[in-house]
Length: 279
Image (cartoon, rainbow, N blue to C red; front, side):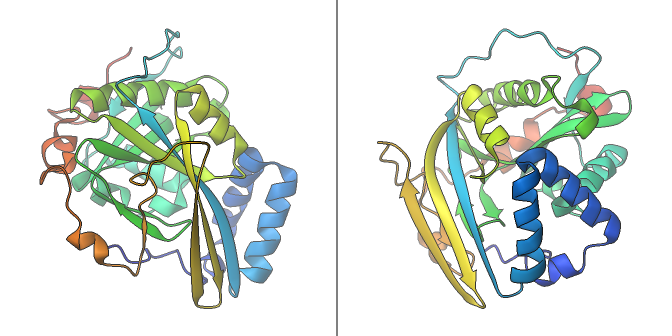
């Protein structure tokens, strides 16, 4: 069962240091623009302790149907899968994404795989993939995926390396890695207000599936689900709240998940230095 991770409650924002708060505002500015950043800042400061509301878009890529575009690889970058002992790269990623602070190593040792783009010794971007049970903090939902499915937990590119095709290159390479271990579908999601992320997902072959609306007033929570378009995909929107344990009784296609037989094989053997290959 997934509980609310540390940093998902109202005290999280009060506990932000000034430096982390500034970095958060900078990322929001780049991702959402000036107006949305201002609204989010006011909401976090004044409203979050009492209420919140997020509209989250779920999308999916069918890896058997998507064919990677013939594009030039970004010059000067190397791509490889992180290992749990790649401490210097892990520290860089955790400093960029506060939601992963102190958690990435455990994810790589458990049900996660992380593809990184390196420029020298600097992590320019990364795509974190999860298998099996996942938790989506923005809407406080958990999901257990089938063995042939995976969840894109985090895709990010450092500010100074944006608009160089790094995000697309990470996606295309993770598509290839997942196909090799038998994954057929990759799911992902983002806030509906993050238009650049939605545009990129659609450009790379993801199809919009559903919207999840999460709202909270004090301790009262509510979830609403809406299909997108004409797709009828109950599996794709079969999420449960963090307080629900019914998922334990659900039956899946296979008893094994890629975190046991698949993710452990991504990039083996050795550390990241051995798995990095320019493409």
